[in-house]
Amino acid sequence: MKKIFFILASALFIAACTSQTEDLLTETGQEQVNQEIQEQEIQEPEGQEVTLCASIALGDDVPAGPQCISGKDSDPGSAAGVINLTWDKEDKVLITENGNSSVFTLAGGEGTTKGRFKGVLQGDGSSYHVQYPAEYTDDSLTVQTYVENGFGRGLMKMSTKTPGNLEDGFVMSADNALVGLQLMGDGAKVSKIEFTNCANSNTYALLCPEIELTDESVLFYIVVPAGEWAQGFKVTVYDASGEPIKDFTKKSSSTFAAGKAIVMPVQPVYQKISVFSVS
Image (tube, rainbow, N blue to C red; front, side, top):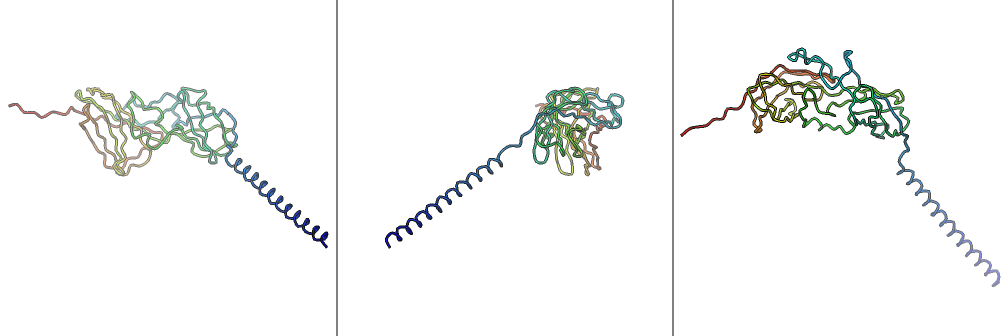
């Protein structure tokens, strides 16, 4: 009887140990599986370094050229033309594809409308969106710096209009517009020009290195968002001391087309006369 009891007790003990061992192995195996899943989740997708071709779209059959405005030299009082863009050294584009983003840097084609960009491509390149410059934000236009006969680098945002296959390269089109302001005066020095959308009060400031105005007009370019400005715009000119010396407003609707430039008629700007008394 004792022997039977001992056998039963041993059997129960072995069964209990086996169950605990199986539970331990199950828990350990599940932990390993969970760890592998976590590693797979945080693992970055592998990419491949590739070279992609990028072209800048030109409208109205305008030939490629440096950053300038067609027609502005012949008749600036009524000039309206296409913005001619070329790729610059160290230009970068942002390629977004199925939630993944990659920055590509210009590797060839500087000074032309056809460039080659190198970078690490994530995914298969079957669907994409491209933006230039890579670091562009909506605040990029808020404060601009005067450039003689042109505008600041990276202000003219470009993008692809429809997704496509990267193997075929991509075509970029300008998203912003350009306004040319012609000013002349009697020696007044311009330090800043503000261009304001009357509908929403959005203001785009052009900082100037105290440019002196004479009887020969000076052309100032400001990059603005394309679209209809339903309530027109206001222009304010500031002198070297930071005081406003000229403002004019167009209250009717104005439309600024993407990739296009409009040069406004000449506006006279005069120095502010100081009022003083003699005792």
